[in-house]
Image (cartoon, rainbow, N blue to C red; front, side, top):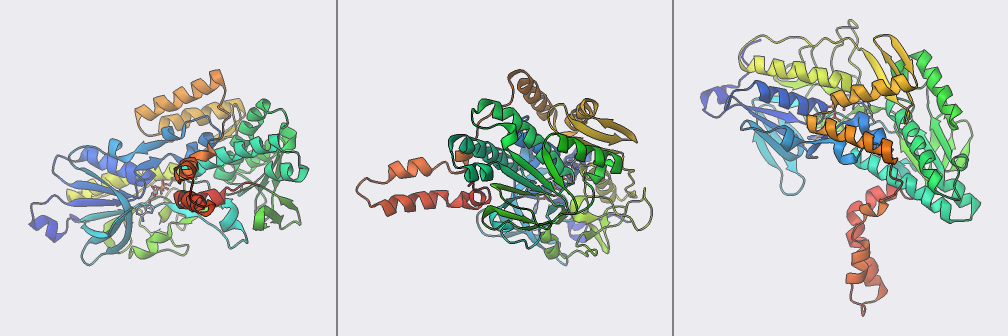
Length: 476
Ligand SMILES: Cc1cc2nc3c(=O)[nH]c(=O)nc-3n(C[C@H](O)[C@H](O)[C@H](O)COP(=O)(O)OP(=O)(O)OC[C@H]3O[C@@H](n4cnc5c(N)ncnc54)[C@H](O)[C@@H]3O)c2cc1C
């Protein structure tokens, strides 16, 4: 492949721009490595993301369980991507004009504007794969973002607070019923870690025992945690059941209107909490990026991580279908951090090679296995064919992820969190009011002479920004 620089960039003295859409796993690690290779002024690396930070998603369950402070599992993009060649924009790329090599960026506030590029990286990741289930949009919550993990933790502890303070058995039962849909990595780790936390926390409540809580994992297939293989999947289901977590396989969520959960096997219950972790699909923004897509909507990508038919455009991670050369023809890489970080490395090296007119290489990686945390001292792992359960797996899970979380600073902070939680136990407090910080002030700030409706309106306007999330996690 020849030098990928556009004629415009070659003709001018302006350094070429490598525009990276998305500052997640692929986006941040690719930009970081390209910046490391570049000489001053050789190119500008611009990363655009609506969030000013990258989220280390495998730590979300531990953040929800209070073992890691939420701010320690995010890496601030401007701090990681520094130097004269780096640029970070907080906003969304909404469309691409490939004829003019221009991206339209919509900042979080203000008018959209255009930015030209010479090389483009599409790394917009995935979104939850949802179904039109009645009540899900109103009452469900996803588990892909740090905000969701924090909100879920506050909500679960808030429901325990509530159950401890009321007498009505039906309301108590509803408050203490937690349903998780989807038995992959995210669902299993989330329910296992949060149940472990709730059991721990219940020691501080005089009216709530662990047996009062109902934890239910619903999975459409006949197995859970396929990432660790069938044998360990069966073992994990048994371990969860021993802890009192109901695991229902071959079962679907049919409805959750008004927090009334109905399952395909006929089970019905009122539940304060419905967490949706039933798989992911490519971020729908790729439909507007003028790139070819595969049968399931992923960006159609070659093994060298170039987008099919577009020499200046690259893609990787959850939004792309990258041929899995280690598995053979017809296979694509799974949406996982394991592939995302390694694809980022290959992508960065290929872009720098392309800029310098050197040959690029194909991405090849043989999946090494998976580790999952199931609560403090509990885990499961299948790495290089080595199957571990319980403590050894949990230690491997922690050692592996702390070695992978970006920046030395974050590694130290995460280890410190673990150490402190080990000595002083996890905090058992719900800070749900963080989601609506103006409520109390708005009430006192309204002059006493105004009618009650004015005070209500003041609260409404202040709470507006958070209303979506509040409704999503609304209690009984
Ligand atoms: C709870 C949980 C646990 C997990 N655990 C594991 C694990 O143990 N092992 C493992 O291998 N994998 C795990 N994964 C999967 C792994 O985190 C993902 O595969 C990985 O994050 C994919 O990286 P990515 O860069 O493709 O997407 P992401 O990391 O999601 O990054 C996409 C970025 O694009 C940004 N973006 C979206 N739209 C736009 C736009 N229009 N313009 C600009 N930017 C945009 C987003 O804000 C985001 O920052 C887990 C996932 C979850 C949710």
